[in-house]
Amino acid sequence: MIEAAIWWYIYSLTLAIVVMSLYGMAARPNLLKKLIMFSILGDTANLMAVMLGVHSGLIQPPVFPGISFTDHPLPGVADLESFARTAVDPIPQVLVVTAIVIGLAVLVFLSYVAMLLYAKYGTLDVREIGRRRSE
Amino acid sequence: MPEQVYLCHVLIALFMTYALILTYKTLVERDMLKAIIYSAGQAVAYTLALTLLAAPDLVLAYVAVGVGMYTALFLFVLSRTERFEAVQGGEAT
Image (cartoon, rainbow over all chains, first blue to last red; front, side, top):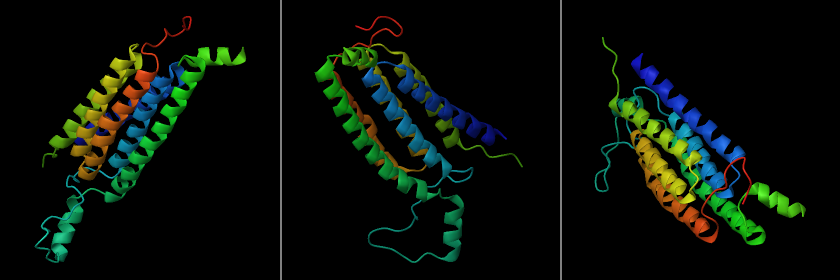
């Protein structure tokens, strides 16, 4: 009961951050503020994907314990069962590692576009850019 | 049998609250330098949440990208452009 309430709280906070960053991207006129809110939105999406693999009772990293560089014994069935009962799902983590780096590349491109717009129009305000384009 | 409450999930809730407050301060801030610093603090909160979500490989990638590269990139854009955001709804300057 308490555990479920904690997860409801975490999910509602994540949803609130998503709504806030979408509002910042849509309603704020400054292009740099839009970029910051875009990065927050991407990171929140990644965090939600990682949260999908974590359930109540799964608290261990998805790395099998007891294996070192020099000693790598074959695990028994009981070891594997207890590991699978406590480790989180590794698939979202593997996907999110790629998504973080791709998000960085997209953000570098958008920052370059913003700097080009500032060099051409002399402002980052999108209303002012639209006004100066139509002149 | 009493239900087990994990401390790490309580701490995740704490860090997400911290991230929500910093996101709101980023949203309402007019000075873009302060907004970038607030978003870096929000990335720190996400890093701690990822640590408690049992994703150590993601922490290694995200602490370099989220705290380091994003902040450096935004500061570079800020050094080439203007610092203060125009007042919303008012006359654009």
